[in-house]
Image (cartoon, rainbow, N blue to C red; front, top):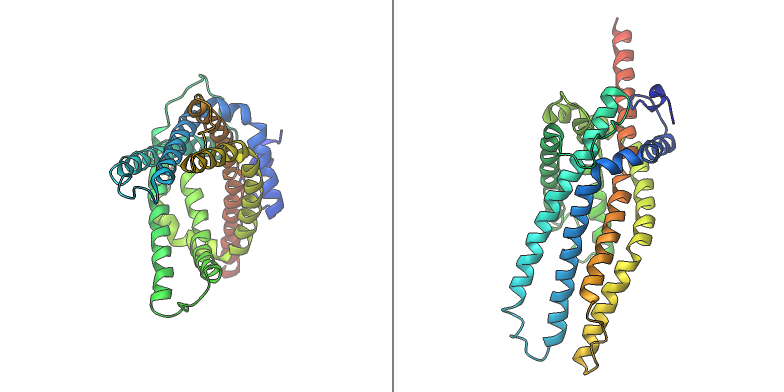
Amino acid sequence: METKNEESPLKIRSARAAIAAGLRLYMGNFRRIFRATWLPALLCAMVAAFATRVMITAVGQIIQVLGVQALAYAPALPQQYLAQTGLTLLDAIVTVVLMSYVFGMLASHRAEGAIPYPTRWWLLPDHHSLTRTLASAAIWLLTQVVAGGLVAALFYFGFVRQSMTIMGAGAVLMLVISALLIPLVYPHMRYLTTRDTNFFQLLRTGYVQGLRRWGYMFTVLLVMLLLLMVALTVTTLPAIVLVVASIYSQMGATMGDPLGMPSYMDWLSLVVFTLSGFIQTYVIMAIHFPTYYMAGTIEQQEILRNEKAENTIH
């Protein structure tokens, strides 16, 4: 494992070095991370599994009655939608709690040079990290809504042609959101991994600093996103197979075929969805560690930049 000096986030690293250092930190401390986070990760996976099961049930009901008794599913589906909404909200809450553990460990690493070893197999979330994670999630959601509203305004006022294809409109959407939101990653990460900062104070300077390093941040995040997509595709395959099998079975039943699914399919699917979601949780978690080093690099570059400016003045 690296020395504390080499592990320090306040060190200038290339995009490749930041990704390598982040993944090294994650894998080198995986036992500690797992010991601290397995319970909220399991809860998160179970909630997502139930939400997926509810979605499949709702789709099955629609398929069975669509075109036969169009009104028959109207009273039933609101119950499914209500359950789906409730589970989605619960999943968001559990995810915030889980991420508070991750950012709490990164804050400890920044302050002390090491990720602490949990003394028990279950831990209550750190109040400070939980509060900051919740605030950050709310601010991030608000900025996404604002970015979406800006894109809608571009279409409404004619800056983007209404006749544009879906792919073209999607490209404009991604371009605007990337340009606006990527620089926000830096102040968010600094806020989440420090104990004595105010987000809005960080935002005043951090957003501009993020804009200055936009290309660097885009490179790190793009590479991590591509790696994440590959890993998630592999870990999601069993769940995808079950979802597709369930839907095709329901479609066959509408044409008079036997359902073709064993009686224990519901329980089997819940187990597979939970296991798949549990693994995916730790795959997704990995992206925060290179981002942590990316933010540290930008912070160190800004420190050196300010020192150089002060020396020039004097």
